[in-house]
Image 1: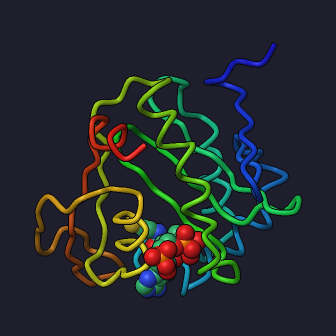
Image 2: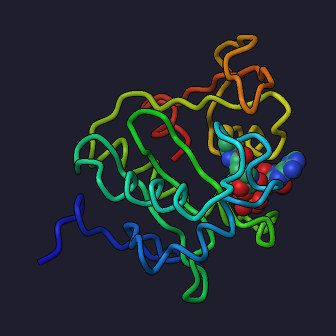
Length: 178
Ligand SMILES: CC(C)(COP(=O)(O)OP(=O)(O)OC[C@H]1O[C@@H](n2cnc3c(N)ncnc32)[C@H](O)[C@@H]1OP(=O)(O)O)[C@@H](O)C(=O)NCCC(=O)NCCS
């Protein structure tokens, strides 16, 4: 019998959410992680080499079952992004730009957030977003996250300082919405 923490497979209306498979997911995830549009507000510049993506996939595969809950998003059998918690309580997500604006991130994150509260007992989830990242901010607000504060010059990415707007979602607020 599979363990819901180590071997979860979550099926939504259109998506399959599953753990990373570093070899099988390499080509699709490298296409996303090297795409300047997808990476415009990420915490690192677009990947320039396959080695960077291999390291990223290995790190995603290496985290322990109680400190993280991160998923590859599959659509029609194809990896189109990732969503989840590389480290609790910080939520993170990235979707192939060809799939933006179709409700994919919202659909993936609802069951992932529910697990964070119910299966992992998290009390409060957080997100750190570039204030220019309108899509990510709208996604968080749609899921019930609220802005808590802002800070300037929080990330230096490829020599350029970026700011942060911080969001949080409590278990009580999530349950009240449900
Ligand atoms: C942020 C991201 C994951 C959203 O994915 P998505 O599948 O397009 O999101 P959804 O379709 O579920 O949209 C969620 C909401 O955000 C809105 N939205 C999406 N992109 C938007 C944009 N660029 N500007 C304004 N609103 C946007 C949608 O309209 C929707 O709101 P609505 O239901 O009220 O219309 C995607 O744009 C992405 O991968 N960005 C690059 C990676 C990234 O920046 N990650 C976050 C780092 S903090």
